Image 1 (cartoon, rainbow, N blue to C red):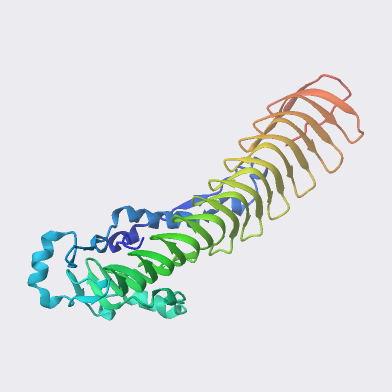
Image 2: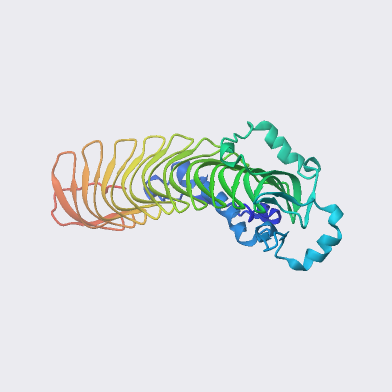
Length: 383
């Protein structure tokens, strides 16, 4: 990220919205906000921001020390012009082996270069805690230098940003924190021009360790990172009051997690690549509940669905609907045991009435077509 944080593309993050669509046929008439709402996923915000790194190599990484201790950019075509305009660049600064670059840099006034928007954000934040200064006390500071498309103010070592420093991009983005060998490393805070903020740990120009990412709309992630991706335990908070707490792997929800909806609905169970996958317990506001297997955000496999009136189905699901063998129980004692297809009774089944008498019959597409063991008229059970 450090030298890769080029200003021109920082605002091109492709912030996406993902929808949890669990296709509950059994609850199709309810207003189930979790099933139909668009749930913000912070990792998609960050993923869009991180993509820009592939295109953002800054010239500062090209600084090198020649054999005669002259520090120049690898872009040697500009060297002659730099020397010609020597009066416009900083004088050579040497302190043992610790050097500040001289060619193709200009001293600038920071206050005239960074946007009022960034300043207004900084004024609302607590001062950044520079708690690693003791590791870099021997390295020299420079004033604000314009280097290519960025402005840097801070410590140097062998013409590389090293120690405490802050950097501005011409689009108004800003970083303050620590550097190591020209890379953002240690604690740091990044403010993007469009309003996003990351504060936390960095390693070799990547978000790595523990940190907080806040999107401009108020969505927030707090937790562990690895190689620029959410990885480990973390928490997400959305502007509508919904939250997620659980495990991440390579930037996606993966493993056990709890998703709490603003309306009170709660899913607790397994995730895989941001999807409900594996075993889960979903409690829907109003009293409905499903406990069982999920696949690709849908009920799939063995599970039990509870209605708020006391009705219960226990059996097989395929792609979100009852399919296979299942038992439907009513609170008044009636029971249907049999086969289902596309959410309806289909095939041979047994009906047990209030009198506890079993009757065997055949159902097609939800309708009884015949009794195999006759015992009087029995009402058709609707799912």
